[in-house]
Amino acid sequence: MSVPLLAVDGLSRSFGKLVVLSQLDLLVEAGGIHAIIGPNGAGKTTFFNLVTGALGPDVGHIRFDGSEIVDLPSYRRTALGICRTFQNIRLFGSMTVLDNVLLGLHCRTRGGLLTPLVGVPFRRPRAEVGARERAGEILELVGLAGTAARSAVELPYGQQRRLEIARALASAPKLLLLDEPSAGMNTQETIELEALIGEVNRRGVTILLIEHKMSLVMKLSRVVTVLNFGQKIAEGPPAAIQRDPRVIEAYLGSE
Amino acid sequence: MPDLAYLVFLVADGALAGSIYALVALAFVVVYKASRMINFAVGEWTMLGARTAAAASHTIGLGPGGAVAVGCAGVVALALLFNRIVLRPLSRSSLLSLIMLTLGVGIFMRGAATVVFAGVPARIASPFPLDPLVVAGVPLSVDKIVAAVIATACIAALSWFFRGSRTGLALRAVASDQQVALAVGIDLHRHFAITWALVGVLSVLAGTLWSFVSGGGFGIELLGFKVFPIVILGGLDSLAGTIVGAFAVGILESLVAGYVDPIVGGGFSHVASYLVLIATLFVRPFGLFGRPDVERV
Image (tube, rainbow over all chains, first blue to last red; front, top):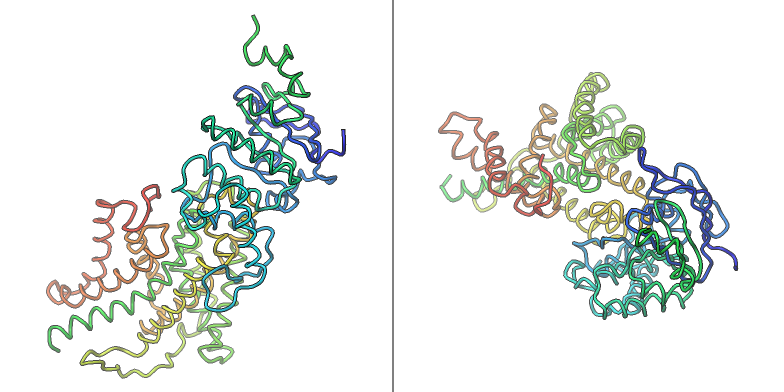
């Protein structure tokens, strides 16, 4: 295995007496697509929350790109190159598509308190012009070119998912965490999503994916980690995971 | 004065007052939007703004402009300190306790102001002529017009700030969904601080302008109560609605003072906006411009 981009060591988190994640070790290889699967309540989303800093762990270490990040606030982790999407789409609904992407770019554009964005009578600073060009490129990449001025809530469901990915990509992540990106998508949309994730990965973004659709997991990922009741029960290439008796038991129950 | 001219006078006079209400209401709404906190001390902040500027004027001997600048620096510093020392450690406690806290802070500020500013005049002397300006037979007081112009300029600047600057965009993101704002890399604490700095500036401007037109610091805290009919009318989460609401309340008060007060013997203008508040809550509990999912005061 090459250098891990994300190295998680002994990570635990409980809510009251409920242990959601217990002593999790996980390595995410740089440049790959890594999937996390597991039954509902296995601790997958909690794991994402711990990696992005939305939650703090009870114990454990998270190393990203060689440095310890477990004590850093969320926004610092985003600056280092970790960004996520949410299981339930969470866009800034009342804003335009472009504003959503510009917010993703917020941490990458330098500017003072009053740096103007748009529509001001005096000249726009170079950084913001660059930001808008970059936002346009990202929208094109995810297939949302031409929707920039629309309000985010007006987009159809599949496109809202794409916009969430676009917003995350705007922060120029090294590691992109996708929380069930295909949830609620039909077959056609899932195939398009698969192509998009593949393309993003080819551009050098390491992807960590929570997913229930096995077809997507099997096609995309190099490594699959299986969680059950907060513990890792299996890890390996998708083909091996599919045959693993512990995994089959976790999903179907033992006889 | 002929009937029509009297009506125009009342509307104009009310709109001029409304522009200052708008500043106070905006100080309230920026905090609400960023953190869902209802700041019951907004009137006290305005009082503090007026008195700090007045103190700068009377003790250092600055002119109105300089006094307002020094006042802004002082109150912004206090607001930032309040945010850092009081609010930030409480950021995980319930909204209800924060709201109660603002009530306590308001009382503390009133008490402390009488001690700290003891013996210092409560207002900057108005630099504007006292004789009213007569436009087409309608007398308008100069200080009110100037106050309205300054207030309108501030409102325009603030609207631009929220719509057109990158910080404004980030503030709107914080208002929309804190968790997602965090996830895209926005430093919440930094933006809460910016919000409180805005409260500081708005307080000094609104307080000073109000002391020009009302002729003294007396009862300036009560200005805070005007905020509630305004934001209920305009919708708690809408900046544009807040501005419309402020003008509506100003004009309503003026009309009621002009037409109803002489009949009932006075004082009804102070009540009228609260009747509208109650009526609005019955008809559109989320305000005329607000979205339905908003909490009520």
